[in-house]
Length: 171
Image 1 (cartoon, rainbow, N blue to C red):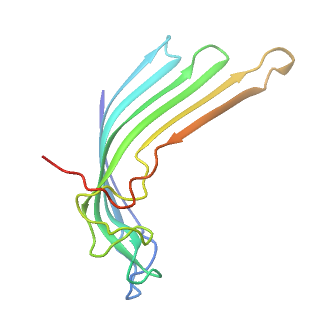
Image 2 (cartoon, rainbow, N blue to C red; image 1 turned 135 degrees about the vertical axis):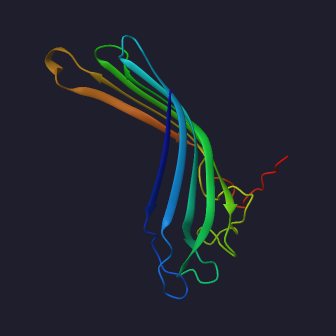
């Protein structure tokens, strides 16, 4: 079992309508998880739940699309499941599944994502997929093909959140 807390800050791209750089983007994350292993340590699994808050996210200014504005705060809560390792001496696999719901906590007046819907508090952040699944697998060949591997993978993600910013009701 583990707990992780992290903070970061990074430069925002773009300028506001007055020609000034946007305030830096900031983030804070809490993560709680469980790690385990099977098959004598050849297969590892991790399950975690998290909350990630991002501040000052750059977005297109709908009044002047050549410029940007900052969205106040977006909170993403969700989980991640990751399984990886060797099922046999030759066969390796990585499975990953995640869910995150990016909810706008503090919007920006007339803010929009890519000139789309207004970004206001209480709505999902538009244009963001919130579920994904991936599977990668490889197999090491034998005999005359020793040293070679064969592999492939699959990636799926849900459709982006509704572009009309469907309101989430709280009880």
